[in-house]
Amino acid sequence: MYQLQVENMSCGHCVGAVTKAVQTIDAGAKVEIDLATKSVKIDSATPLAPLKSAIADAGYPVTSAA
Image (cartoon, rainbow, N blue to C red; front, side, top):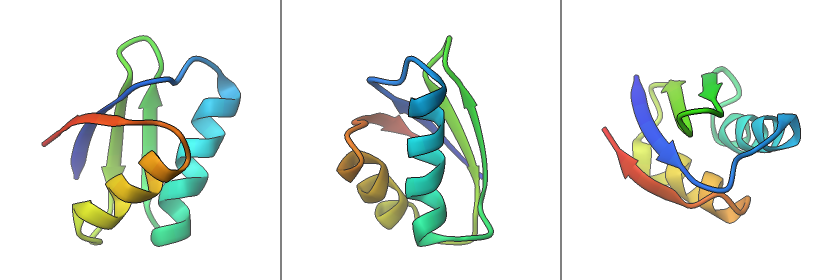
């Protein structure tokens, strides 16, 4: 389980775009997004680096990850 802070998310479209970016890398990943806190929780066995890159490539900078 990864916990990320992701900027530029403000609406349902953003939620869909970030979810799609993650699931392009890992189709089975579970993604939970809280727009109010700009947090993204990802349940995936995939290494964090390609997931972060996919989110950033979709236009949503990852500012922190744990």
